[in-house]
Image (cartoon, rainbow, N blue to C red; front, side, top):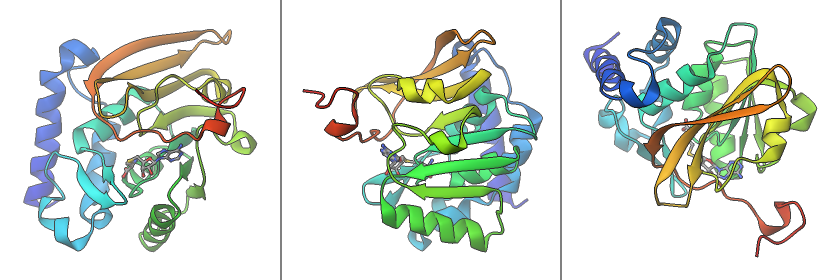
Length: 227
Ligand code: SAH
Protein backbone atom coordinates (compact mmCIF):
# COMPACT_ATOMS: atom_id res chain seq x y z
CA UNK A 1 0.00 0.00 0.00
CA UNK A 2 1.46 3.37 -0.95
CA UNK A 3 1.37 6.52 1.22
CA UNK A 4 -1.56 8.07 -0.66
CA UNK A 5 -3.61 4.92 -0.31
CA UNK A 6 -2.80 4.73 3.41
CA UNK A 7 -3.94 8.33 3.70
CA UNK A 8 -7.21 7.48 1.94
CA UNK A 9 -7.92 4.67 4.40
CA UNK A 10 -7.08 6.89 7.38
CA UNK A 11 -9.46 9.55 6.07
CA UNK A 12 -12.25 6.99 5.68
CA UNK A 13 -11.68 5.80 9.27
CA UNK A 14 -11.75 9.38 10.55
CA UNK A 15 -14.88 10.30 8.64
CA UNK A 16 -16.58 7.10 9.79
CA UNK A 17 -16.02 8.30 13.37
CA UNK A 18 -17.27 11.83 12.61
CA UNK A 19 -20.49 10.50 11.13
CA UNK A 20 -21.08 7.75 13.70
CA UNK A 21 -24.06 9.51 15.28
CA UNK A 22 -25.86 9.41 11.91
CA UNK A 23 -24.75 6.06 10.60
CA UNK A 24 -24.80 4.15 13.88
CA UNK A 25 -21.30 2.79 13.25
CA UNK A 26 -17.99 4.05 14.67
CA UNK A 27 -15.97 2.09 12.17
CA UNK A 28 -16.57 0.04 9.07
CA UNK A 29 -16.18 -3.71 8.94
CA UNK A 30 -12.52 -4.74 8.53
CA UNK A 31 -13.45 -6.82 5.48
CA UNK A 32 -14.82 -3.67 3.85
CA UNK A 33 -11.67 -1.71 4.73
CA UNK A 34 -9.54 -4.50 3.26
CA UNK A 35 -11.53 -4.37 0.05
CA UNK A 36 -11.05 -0.60 -0.06
CA UNK A 37 -7.33 -1.17 0.36
CA UNK A 38 -7.06 -3.83 -2.29
CA UNK A 39 -8.80 -1.92 -5.09
CA UNK A 40 -6.53 0.63 -6.74
CA UNK A 41 -8.74 3.71 -7.22
CA UNK A 42 -6.13 5.20 -9.54
CA UNK A 43 -7.01 2.58 -12.15
CA UNK A 44 -10.60 3.91 -12.27
CA UNK A 45 -9.91 7.57 -13.09
CA UNK A 46 -8.56 9.12 -16.27
CA UNK A 47 -4.89 10.16 -16.47
CA UNK A 48 -5.61 13.84 -15.73
CA UNK A 49 -7.00 12.93 -12.28
CA UNK A 50 -4.42 10.35 -11.19
CA UNK A 51 -2.91 12.80 -8.70
CA UNK A 52 -6.27 13.13 -6.98
CA UNK A 53 -7.21 9.45 -7.13
CA UNK A 54 -6.75 8.83 -3.40
CA UNK A 55 -8.30 12.08 -2.18
CA UNK A 56 -11.59 11.68 -0.38
CA UNK A 57 -13.67 13.41 -3.05
CA UNK A 58 -15.74 12.52 -6.11
CA UNK A 59 -14.01 12.96 -9.50
CA UNK A 60 -15.38 13.48 -13.02
CA UNK A 61 -15.49 10.36 -15.23
CA UNK A 62 -16.95 12.05 -18.32
CA UNK A 63 -20.54 12.38 -19.61
CA UNK A 64 -21.36 14.60 -16.60
CA UNK A 65 -20.92 11.66 -14.22
CA UNK A 66 -18.62 11.10 -11.24
CA UNK A 67 -16.83 8.34 -9.38
CA UNK A 68 -18.11 8.55 -5.80
CA UNK A 69 -15.94 9.65 -2.91
CA UNK A 70 -14.11 6.77 -1.20
CA UNK A 71 -15.80 7.29 2.18
CA UNK A 72 -19.25 6.99 0.56
CA UNK A 73 -18.22 3.83 -1.32
CA UNK A 74 -17.00 2.34 1.97
CA UNK A 75 -20.17 3.40 3.81
CA UNK A 76 -22.53 1.99 1.18
CA UNK A 77 -20.54 -1.23 1.06
CA UNK A 78 -20.61 -1.49 4.85
CA UNK A 79 -24.36 -0.84 5.02
CA UNK A 80 -25.30 -3.75 2.76
CA UNK A 81 -23.39 -6.12 5.06
CA UNK A 82 -22.48 -8.72 2.43
CA UNK A 83 -20.86 -12.14 2.76
CA UNK A 84 -18.62 -14.13 0.40
CA UNK A 85 -21.56 -16.18 -0.90
CA UNK A 86 -23.71 -13.18 -1.83
CA UNK A 87 -25.00 -12.04 -5.21
CA UNK A 88 -25.24 -8.29 -5.51
CA UNK A 89 -26.76 -5.83 -7.99
CA UNK A 90 -25.38 -2.34 -8.55
CA UNK A 91 -27.27 0.35 -10.47
CA UNK A 92 -24.93 2.96 -12.00
CA UNK A 93 -21.64 1.26 -12.94
CA UNK A 94 -19.92 4.57 -13.77
CA UNK A 95 -16.17 3.90 -13.57
CA UNK A 96 -16.65 0.38 -12.18
CA UNK A 97 -14.97 1.26 -8.87
CA UNK A 98 -17.86 0.42 -6.54
CA UNK A 99 -18.42 -2.81 -8.47
CA UNK A 100 -14.74 -3.72 -8.01
CA UNK A 101 -14.91 -3.11 -4.25
CA UNK A 102 -18.02 -5.30 -4.04
CA UNK A 103 -16.40 -7.99 -6.18
CA UNK A 104 -13.70 -8.45 -3.53
CA UNK A 105 -16.38 -9.27 -0.97
CA UNK A 106 -19.05 -11.32 -2.72
CA UNK A 107 -19.49 -14.20 -5.16
CA UNK A 108 -21.00 -12.27 -8.07
CA UNK A 109 -21.69 -8.63 -8.93
CA UNK A 110 -24.19 -7.60 -11.59
CA UNK A 111 -24.04 -3.94 -12.55
CA UNK A 112 -26.10 -1.82 -14.94
CA UNK A 113 -25.02 1.43 -16.61
CA UNK A 114 -27.23 3.62 -18.75
CA UNK A 115 -24.49 5.43 -20.72
CA UNK A 116 -23.05 2.90 -23.23
CA UNK A 117 -19.59 4.53 -23.44
CA UNK A 118 -19.16 4.39 -19.65
CA UNK A 119 -20.43 0.81 -19.49
CA UNK A 120 -18.02 -0.26 -22.24
CA UNK A 121 -15.06 1.49 -20.61
CA UNK A 122 -15.85 -0.03 -17.21
CA UNK A 123 -16.26 -3.49 -18.75
CA UNK A 124 -12.86 -3.28 -20.48
CA UNK A 125 -11.18 -1.87 -17.40
CA UNK A 126 -12.55 -4.54 -15.07
CA UNK A 127 -11.54 -7.25 -17.53
CA UNK A 128 -8.00 -5.87 -17.84
CA UNK A 129 -7.72 -5.70 -14.05
CA UNK A 130 -8.73 -9.36 -13.84
CA UNK A 131 -12.17 -9.14 -12.22
CA UNK A 132 -14.08 -12.18 -13.40
CA UNK A 133 -17.09 -12.01 -11.09
CA UNK A 134 -18.59 -8.79 -12.44
CA UNK A 135 -21.09 -8.63 -15.29
CA UNK A 136 -21.79 -5.20 -16.78
CA UNK A 137 -25.04 -4.58 -18.65
CA UNK A 138 -25.90 -1.51 -20.70
CA UNK A 139 -29.35 -0.11 -19.99
CA UNK A 140 -31.53 1.42 -17.35
CA UNK A 141 -31.40 -0.14 -13.93
CA UNK A 142 -34.69 1.36 -12.80
CA UNK A 143 -36.38 -2.01 -13.19
CA UNK A 144 -33.40 -3.95 -11.86
CA UNK A 145 -32.22 -7.15 -13.55
CA UNK A 146 -35.05 -9.63 -13.24
CA UNK A 147 -33.23 -12.62 -14.85
CA UNK A 148 -30.44 -12.49 -12.28
CA UNK A 149 -32.65 -11.82 -9.27
CA UNK A 150 -33.18 -12.29 -6.36
CA UNK A 151 -30.24 -10.42 -4.87
CA UNK A 152 -28.79 -10.47 -1.38
CA UNK A 153 -28.05 -6.78 -1.74
CA UNK A 154 -28.61 -3.87 -4.13
CA UNK A 155 -26.53 -0.68 -4.25
CA UNK A 156 -27.92 2.24 -6.24
CA UNK A 157 -25.22 4.84 -6.91
CA UNK A 158 -27.42 7.54 -8.45
CA UNK A 159 -30.13 9.53 -6.69
CA UNK A 160 -33.71 8.38 -7.19
CA UNK A 161 -36.83 10.41 -6.41
CA UNK A 162 -38.34 7.38 -4.68
CA UNK A 163 -37.52 3.77 -3.84
CA UNK A 164 -38.29 1.75 -7.01
CA UNK A 165 -40.67 -1.08 -6.11
CA UNK A 166 -39.14 -3.44 -8.71
CA UNK A 167 -35.81 -3.22 -6.90
CA UNK A 168 -37.44 -4.09 -3.59
CA UNK A 169 -39.17 -7.01 -5.33
CA UNK A 170 -35.79 -8.31 -6.53
CA UNK A 171 -34.30 -8.40 -3.03
CA UNK A 172 -34.22 -11.71 -1.19
CA UNK A 173 -36.04 -11.87 2.14
CA UNK A 174 -33.46 -10.56 4.60
CA UNK A 175 -31.79 -8.61 1.76
CA UNK A 176 -30.53 -5.04 2.01
CA UNK A 177 -30.49 -2.11 -0.39
CA UNK A 178 -28.80 1.29 -0.12
CA UNK A 179 -30.11 4.09 -2.29
CA UNK A 180 -29.82 7.88 -2.25
CA UNK A 181 -33.31 9.36 -2.39
CA UNK A 182 -34.13 12.98 -3.09
CA UNK A 183 -34.41 15.60 -5.79
CA UNK A 184 -31.74 15.96 -8.51
CA UNK A 185 -28.86 18.19 -7.34
CA UNK A 186 -30.75 19.00 -4.13
CA UNK A 187 -30.67 17.45 -0.69
CA UNK A 188 -30.76 13.67 -0.79
CA UNK A 189 -30.81 11.09 1.96
CA UNK A 190 -28.93 7.85 1.79
CA UNK A 191 -31.59 5.28 2.67
CA UNK A 192 -31.06 1.75 3.94
CA UNK A 193 -33.88 -0.58 2.95
CA UNK A 194 -34.12 -3.92 4.72
CA UNK A 195 -36.53 -6.57 3.50
CA UNK A 196 -37.54 -8.75 6.41
CA UNK A 197 -37.76 -12.54 6.25
CA UNK A 198 -41.53 -12.14 5.89
CA UNK A 199 -41.06 -9.72 2.99
CA UNK A 200 -41.97 -6.50 4.86
CA UNK A 201 -39.91 -3.44 3.99
CA UNK A 202 -38.14 -1.44 6.67
CA UNK A 203 -36.40 1.80 5.68
CA UNK A 204 -34.09 4.06 7.61
CA UNK A 205 -32.41 7.29 6.68
CA UNK A 206 -28.64 7.16 7.17
CA UNK A 207 -27.00 10.39 6.03
CA UNK A 208 -27.41 13.46 3.83
CA UNK A 209 -25.58 12.91 0.52
CA UNK A 210 -25.19 14.32 -2.98
CA UNK A 211 -25.35 12.02 -6.01
CA UNK A 212 -25.89 12.50 -9.73
CA UNK A 213 -29.50 11.72 -10.67
CA UNK A 214 -30.85 8.29 -11.54
CA UNK A 215 -32.15 9.01 -15.01
CA UNK A 216 -35.54 7.43 -15.62
CA UNK A 217 -37.40 7.85 -18.90
CA UNK A 218 -41.10 8.71 -18.72
CA UNK A 219 -42.13 5.43 -20.26
CA UNK A 220 -40.28 3.47 -17.59
CA UNK A 221 -42.67 4.56 -14.88
CA UNK A 222 -45.50 2.17 -14.15
CA UNK A 223 -48.55 3.57 -15.92
CA UNK A 224 -46.55 5.65 -18.38
CA UNK A 225 -45.67 9.32 -18.12
CA UNK A 226 -44.57 10.67 -14.78
CA UNK A 227 -46.29 13.94 -15.69
N1 SAH B 1 -20.76 3.58 -8.98
C1 SAH B 1 -19.99 4.48 -9.84
C2 SAH B 1 -20.44 5.92 -9.71
C3 SAH B 1 -21.63 6.11 -10.47
S1 SAH B 1 -22.21 7.74 -10.84
C4 SAH B 1 -18.52 4.35 -9.61
O1 SAH B 1 -18.10 3.62 -8.70
O2 SAH B 1 -17.76 4.97 -10.37
C5 SAH B 1 -23.85 7.24 -11.30
C6 SAH B 1 -23.95 6.47 -12.57
O3 SAH B 1 -25.32 6.08 -12.71
C7 SAH B 1 -23.61 7.27 -13.83
O4 SAH B 1 -22.62 6.62 -14.55
C8 SAH B 1 -24.94 7.32 -14.59
O5 SAH B 1 -24.79 7.27 -15.98
C9 SAH B 1 -25.64 6.08 -14.08
N2 SAH B 1 -27.10 6.09 -14.21
C10 SAH B 1 -27.97 7.12 -14.08
N3 SAH B 1 -29.23 6.70 -14.25
C11 SAH B 1 -29.18 5.37 -14.49
C12 SAH B 1 -30.16 4.36 -14.74
N4 SAH B 1 -31.46 4.63 -14.78
N5 SAH B 1 -29.73 3.10 -14.94
C13 SAH B 1 -28.40 2.79 -14.92
N6 SAH B 1 -27.43 3.70 -14.69
C14 SAH B 1 -27.82 4.97 -14.47
